[in-house]
Length: 246
Image 1 (cartoon, helix red, strand yellow):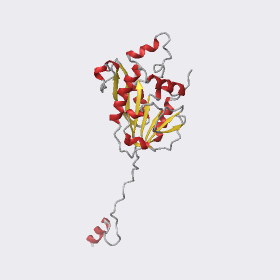
Image 2 (cartoon, one colour):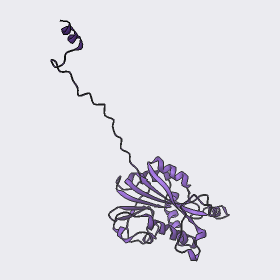
Image 3 (cartoon, one colour):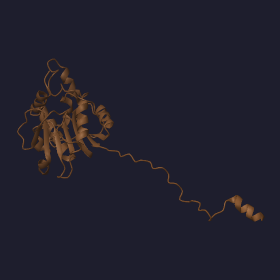
Image 4 (cartoon, one colour):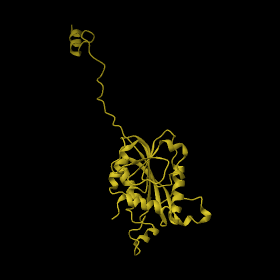
């Protein structure tokens, strides 16, 4: 079975194929519109795509880092070679984290999400690109000789399951894009994406999640009454009655 490094390399090669170029065009357009943060923010991407310049504004280049396990494609960005399930990054140091189909080709999906949650700052944004496992196009993987073909051989996750996993990690998340190959004929080069439910022909989707932090507010005991009895100022009721009888 190919390791994670070889699978990610094969995925980068698939993006240069005709179908890969179509999905690349839509995904890059989505990311270029979705990433709207100050240039001072730190952006990290887990897994190199080789086409980062298509969706990343030049103002972010100085604060953009790619973490990958294998040989990096030719890129002008800073790179870190490391295992993705044990990131060499400090906790809560990243403002925006991008996973371009990295989750489907990693060994431990849950550990990768836990690491993503750890390195993100509170209110940090996570963008996950994934292939739709129940797409009509995914039936292609069951054809003879295509069972282990990239990208259909990855462990694709349904969008509902991914949303559940992220919710358990205290993320506020939603599906923000669907990609459909039927919209990618030459007259549709500008690209489109669906924002509604999962269409049968959708081949991939995008999820945007925000890391939420909740601070426990301790409940203080009720303050004692500030009224106090001062001797000599107020006589007890029984004493007042005795004085009245005299």
